[in-house]
Image 1 (cartoon, helix red, strand yellow):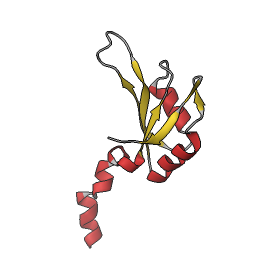
Image 2: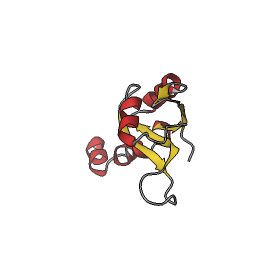
Image 3: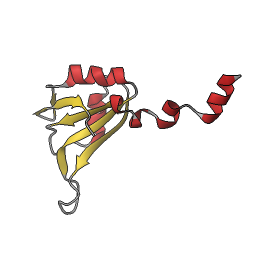
Image 4: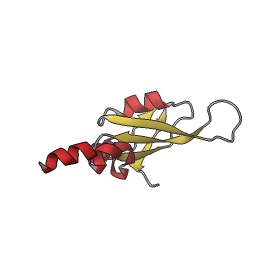
Length: 105
Protein backbone atom coordinates (compact mmCIF):
# COMPACT_ATOMS: atom_id res chain seq x y z
CA UNK A 1 0.00 0.00 0.00
CA UNK A 2 0.89 3.68 -0.05
CA UNK A 3 1.89 3.64 3.62
CA UNK A 4 4.66 1.10 2.90
CA UNK A 5 6.25 3.52 0.44
CA UNK A 6 6.05 6.41 2.94
CA UNK A 7 7.75 4.34 5.63
CA UNK A 8 10.64 3.33 3.39
CA UNK A 9 11.30 6.83 2.16
CA UNK A 10 10.59 8.44 5.52
CA UNK A 11 8.41 11.48 5.88
CA UNK A 12 10.08 14.86 6.20
CA UNK A 13 9.28 15.11 9.88
CA UNK A 14 10.67 11.71 10.89
CA UNK A 15 13.95 12.26 9.02
CA UNK A 16 14.36 15.84 10.23
CA UNK A 17 13.35 15.35 13.84
CA UNK A 18 12.48 18.10 16.32
CA UNK A 19 15.95 19.69 16.16
CA UNK A 20 15.06 21.08 12.74
CA UNK A 21 11.51 22.19 13.57
CA UNK A 22 11.58 25.87 14.64
CA UNK A 23 8.34 25.40 16.59
CA UNK A 24 10.14 22.96 18.92
CA UNK A 25 12.97 25.39 19.71
CA UNK A 26 13.09 27.82 22.62
CA UNK A 27 15.58 30.56 23.43
CA UNK A 28 16.79 30.82 27.01
CA UNK A 29 18.40 34.12 27.97
CA UNK A 30 19.95 35.79 31.03
CA UNK A 31 21.61 32.52 32.04
CA UNK A 32 24.31 32.49 34.68
CA UNK A 33 27.71 32.24 33.02
CA UNK A 34 28.36 29.09 35.07
CA UNK A 35 25.28 27.26 33.71
CA UNK A 36 26.18 24.35 31.43
CA UNK A 37 24.04 22.39 28.96
CA UNK A 38 23.26 19.45 31.31
CA UNK A 39 21.73 21.46 34.19
CA UNK A 40 19.91 23.57 31.60
CA UNK A 41 18.48 20.41 30.02
CA UNK A 42 17.41 19.06 33.42
CA UNK A 43 15.74 22.33 34.42
CA UNK A 44 13.97 22.82 31.09
CA UNK A 45 12.90 19.16 31.24
CA UNK A 46 10.32 20.11 33.88
CA UNK A 47 8.18 21.45 31.00
CA UNK A 48 8.55 18.53 28.59
CA UNK A 49 10.96 16.11 26.94
CA UNK A 50 14.14 17.90 25.90
CA UNK A 51 15.64 16.47 22.70
CA UNK A 52 18.65 18.81 22.69
CA UNK A 53 20.13 21.66 24.69
CA UNK A 54 23.10 23.91 24.08
CA UNK A 55 24.70 26.93 25.72
CA UNK A 56 25.69 29.60 23.19
CA UNK A 57 29.44 30.09 23.57
CA UNK A 58 31.68 32.98 22.69
CA UNK A 59 34.35 31.25 20.60
CA UNK A 60 36.69 34.23 20.45
CA UNK A 61 37.19 34.59 24.21
CA UNK A 62 40.35 32.52 24.59
CA UNK A 63 40.71 29.09 26.16
CA UNK A 64 37.99 27.25 28.04
CA UNK A 65 34.25 27.70 28.15
CA UNK A 66 32.84 31.21 27.74
CA UNK A 67 29.08 31.37 27.93
CA UNK A 68 27.22 34.19 26.25
CA UNK A 69 24.51 33.81 28.88
CA UNK A 70 21.99 32.28 26.51
CA UNK A 71 21.03 28.88 25.21
CA UNK A 72 18.94 26.82 22.85
CA UNK A 73 16.59 24.09 24.04
CA UNK A 74 14.73 21.82 21.62
CA UNK A 75 11.63 19.94 22.78
CA UNK A 76 10.08 16.81 21.28
CA UNK A 77 6.90 18.69 20.33
CA UNK A 78 5.84 22.30 19.65
CA UNK A 79 3.30 21.97 22.50
CA UNK A 80 6.07 21.25 24.99
CA UNK A 81 8.05 24.25 23.73
CA UNK A 82 4.97 26.43 24.22
CA UNK A 83 4.49 25.06 27.76
CA UNK A 84 8.13 25.84 28.56
CA UNK A 85 7.75 29.44 27.42
CA UNK A 86 4.53 29.86 29.42
CA UNK A 87 5.75 28.18 32.62
CA UNK A 88 9.52 28.77 32.80
CA UNK A 89 9.89 32.36 31.55
CA UNK A 90 10.75 34.57 34.53
CA UNK A 91 11.76 31.66 36.78
CA UNK A 92 15.14 31.29 38.49
CA UNK A 93 18.02 29.06 37.44
CA UNK A 94 21.45 29.25 39.12
CA UNK A 95 20.49 32.50 40.84
CA UNK A 96 19.38 34.30 37.66
CA UNK A 97 15.88 35.15 36.43
CA UNK A 98 15.84 33.53 33.01
CA UNK A 99 14.03 34.61 29.86
CA UNK A 100 12.38 31.81 27.89
CA UNK A 101 11.02 32.75 24.46
CA UNK A 102 10.50 31.44 20.94
CA UNK A 103 13.72 30.77 19.02
CA UNK A 104 14.43 33.25 16.24
CA UNK A 105 17.04 32.06 13.74
